[in-house]
Image (cartoon, rainbow, N blue to C red):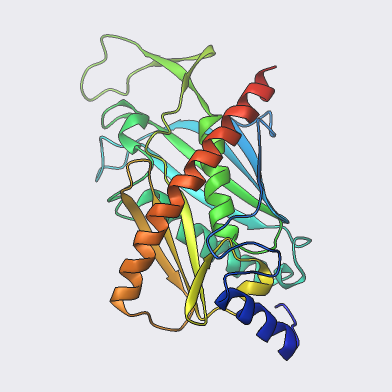
Length: 286
């Protein structure tokens, strides 16, 4: 936990009330965002995202598997987050494990529409090779390298960038297999299909401090929050998922206002991220 004096707490809260935060930002302004792609050569796709002093890495591994009997027309995506014990003293021991599980679940809700997959921001049907028999399983691993607040948004951005960097090998299915046989497949080592990221949302976390809420909170600001709502919004402005933390309840009218603000902010974040990813990909290829 961040140890702050009473004066520092009042300074943070007073600044937010006057729309001038400790680092000079306004309430709805992000810190500078830096993106690198292709940082892990062995993965199918990877990216590193820095938001201020928060630094995270996401990597994606694609393996052929079998669709679940409940969703024979969809592939599968699993998200695992790990918090480096050097990222913050609180991550040592069980603290890091608990936060990692919380972040994994929140990303599952925001990017995959929870366990049901309803409203998923990642198109699982695009991962099918042969319906009911063969699909791609995507394993998304995230690592928190350094933590200074707003981990969920940073990890969401890193996963989006890693998916943009992901090549799925082209698969040829052998003809002639009967309906009950497992078809034979030939996986190309040279031809890769670009993963479709057009529906992948960005995550905007609004952190409530006093009567106001802010985006991209630092660790010090998060230590003063009453609650935080994370909203994932795609390019079309559709809400893909919502998750809340913090014990204080929120009036439904405040939630609706937060959703409206998140939609507005997500456009700027999406444009900034798209431009950073395009630059990183161009650099990666050169």
